[in-house]
Length: 260
Image (cartoon, one colour):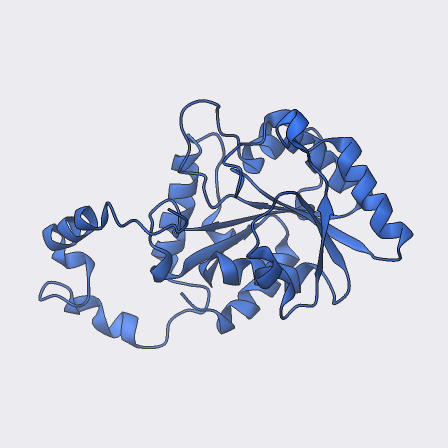
């Protein structure tokens, strides 16, 4: 119950794999791709795989946002994707603000090697743990008064562990705050394809394209993975998607150390 392992559906994946032997290099129908996979590949990731990921991300979001495959950076799972962003965006001792309660794995992903700190944005059950501007401001001012430089805000949407989704107004508020204070906004959207029809799921990509006038796109970044929506954590397929050219270029260099 506590792991994103698709135990109840693995038989369906096995059946699909048997019905599509050409999809694997480990079958009689698949060797035509063996050399391509076995030899050195483009460190950016296979172009058609990045194209497929960009298409799927758009599909999951009901085509309300479009994704450029050239901005897709492949990584060894969302763990590697988050660490890559931490290295790209902050120096040791600097901080990301994180709404509470948050996924405890972020302490590993963002902090263990990068030296980045995670500081809480205090959210409360009295308003269903919604992220308010007042709470963000309080966390930001508390950090700066203690001499800690805030470099970003990290959220999960849909939320882990709450299972809730952030509404448009909240996402727009966060994008505006990031622009005003010149900090980054990292949205972990690893559960984007695992939501019900109600309440409607809204991606930060849709908000900055349609709803929030004037946010600085260079400050917006998305982490995604196949681990949750497909229940395939062992495949170690994660991505960083950034609207910032410098971050994409830096993340591509770092992806050499975290291949899929």
